[in-house]
Length: 105
Image (cartoon, rainbow, N blue to C red; front, side, top):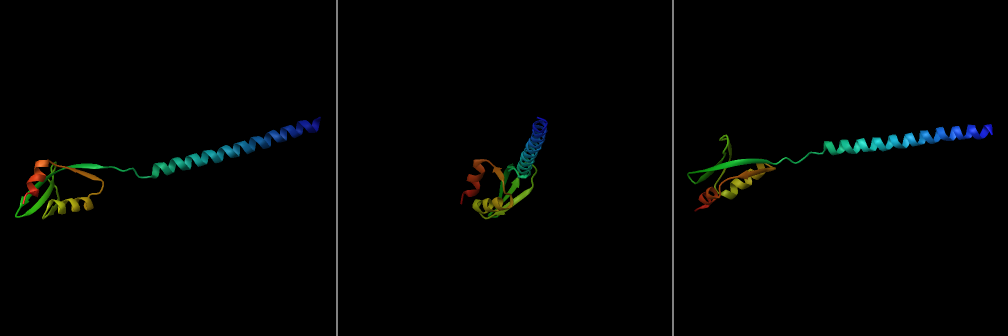
């Protein structure tokens, strides 16, 4: 009878240690997954209002809010390519009448 009680106590302790070890591994895995999700970059899209000025057959593009020069080109398509290359993840907003005006030949 004494050996049965000792065996039960030893089994309980071994089971407790095994359960604790399994839970610690699970928590460690969950923490690593959370850290990996935090470190992944989030896409931030910037919106810039633009203004066009056409001088001597060259079109200049400026930030409408602060007047900063953004790009220049011979056509709207040239400016569009330059803006896409120099400002990724950015949306440019302008009046449709300005686009119609600069694309007139």
